Image (cartoon, rainbow, N blue to C red):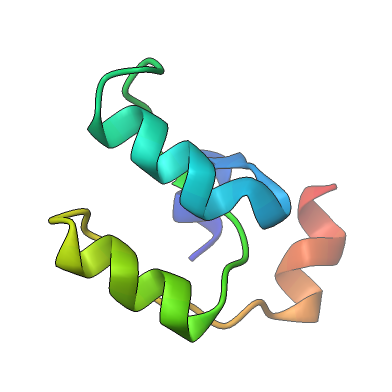
Length: 65
């Protein structure tokens, strides 16, 4: 988990917007992480955008900042 966190950019609540920009080649391809609603995550999947839900563990959040 720590490796994944270190190799991705936290885009916060802009996750769905950034994922779409990357998918439609409006932004450079890169690994991102952030927050979105379950409905928005499902909408991304329906558009063919792969997303994976992961719990945010406080210990990881605190050590990576």
